Length: 262
Image (cartoon, rainbow, N blue to C red):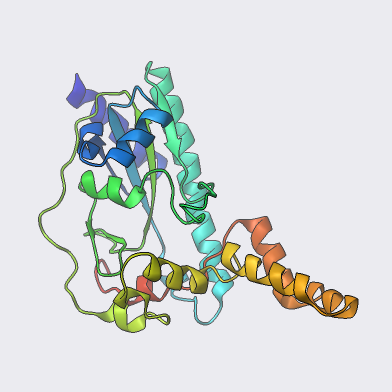
């Protein structure tokens, strides 16, 4: 029964447009108390985590240096696909009598002093790794055999008894250093919070980090004329546009540099 159910759910995901699909058991996070705690809060019935990937179109994100909006819109389309697939799979599981709780594909995430708006309750990358969709590269992204790091992920916590995949022993990252060399911030040569903040301040420069800096600049403006000038600036318009579209990515260097999956 478990095998047949798994095949049917995976097939449904593929029919909906997922390029890769697998699952892992909740027990994969038994040695991670924080993750286990979050799973319990999100869906205490969780037995399996269904995870799937939609590939990015390399030729569109490669336009990032020439026209960042093309790469951004292409990314937005990928997230739209993931949202559609996620809701359809939730309905499929619900129709079969199973619970489902979706993990956001990128937003919303907790806006807390601890997360700094940079981390979700659960790491989609870690879920995908545990399910055997790929390995973690020097770029700190999931690297898949088929598409390299050029994928976006979705996941659903469910009590459906899905047959799990398992982490891949082979390391797809060839240690070519191309992603490290392409990084404009040097963040891939750093570790921990310093690396995350360096990367985020650059690739989300018109997201929350930039918005905070802009708000401080606006508050400290010495005159009403300077405040109006800031509000009428293209910088402010960029924030407005991003808040409407929900897409804040301004750097695709490590994705475009990786040779895996080309």
